[in-house]
Length: 309
Ligand code: GLN
Image (cartoon, rainbow, N blue to C red):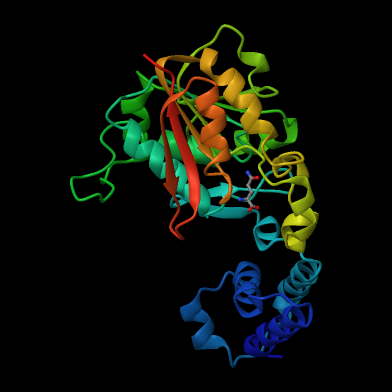
């Protein structure tokens, strides 16, 4: 059997299971098992697998089988790219989504001149939001034309160390183990800490310049309609926002004010249909400067608000 035939077999198996991106998924699993990039594959695809590669072949078919069971590709490979960084993921955290980059970018563009000293990432999951902020926020992270500056991660951490602290919190201990792993992988131990907390419970008497969150916001009844990858393999507790999807926004609106310094900012990811309801909750709770930001596809995706000065 040649490499080409094996990859083709993987693709057919995935197609048979109704996987939409069968070719692409098969390729990622193949390149993972054979440590091959595109160039090497095209050069060698007509060659027969060697004796020594039986294990890699069996490994590949085992991964294809897992993917056929609708386990998300990122959980099989153990990583997802987000904001140009690689994050470890497993079944205990939501896989970082591109939508959420809108939240991070909104915080970056609004906060980089303010130099916040204490930031809280509530419901952090993999830690992708807080950790991206820890990488990009310290120092002047953009040149005038918006292109990230060449600056080593160590330099950035060093620059931010003196004045910034990012706290990643989650109610799930298993999620926090993932966040902790990501802190280590990105070398952000000096900027970031983790705290287990059911929303603000563990933060009595504390205040932050900035609170960021992508809480669970899918209405209970909608969860059944999600793809099997999300519905059956991503943590329900990271998705389920209660009967109307607003449970966490209600709690955050009611409580966040006292955990923000005067003038402190709150940034929330929201579902595409929550661009009216969430601002209303925040307004009722006394927040000011409320703005809704759209994502790249034109859907409402982020709400920013502030505690009055
Ligand atoms: N955007 C995610 C999804 O559509 C949900 C994220 C969340 O509930 N915080 O699956």
